Length: 303
Image: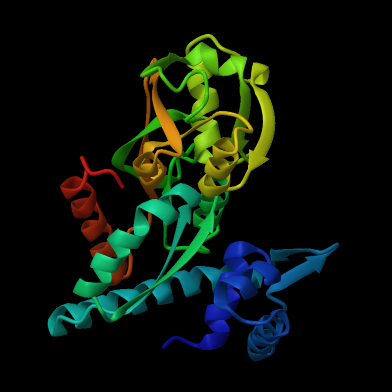
């Protein structure tokens, strides 16, 4: 509804990148550049300084950005006020989730949400925890759901549910007859882990450190980018791993993997993370409330 040139300018100014703005707006970079130039021609002044592949706001650009923030906030408040009167909840939300959550938790949650709110479109981006937090910081996504602690104190973070991590071994492994394995024992075997930036990897390293173990002593034989790849490698007897118990229900039922409790046990929260905006789309508030209730109702379920 607002001036498209102003929307494009505001996104570029917020991200300080024409490339990131084009990705966020689902536009080509030349189209973004064209819209910004149109606005600069309208004001007859430069809004960005462009030097050495970096951009910054000029004094005029800073003034326009401040007004644009206020304009879009008013537009949003107006939109929500009218929708509250009409009872309509619609729009498009972009959610980001780390791999484990996207594959094993969100499909059911978003399916139930879609039934209740058919006019709200949801787009899902999948990355590791580090990537999801970065997308929230840069306003590429409206809401992130992650599996590791978030250090940025400028973001709102709230726990959704707890997830238990367990050791997995192939059924012919010498540990397969055990029910509980001391944390230190995982140092004795070839280990398959997630990539750098993964929330699962981060919490395992932190858990080892908290109990006097050095994660650098892990005999890492493979680094893989998804729970499915790790499970396949463990089934093939290429090593052992520590994964979310939520990811192995099928393999436990088929008997292709054996899960062992860790001692000390390891649990982590799945958390919502978003900007601390005083104003949000009504659809975003409805999704957050729906997700909170869903997590409460299903807290004891295996995802």
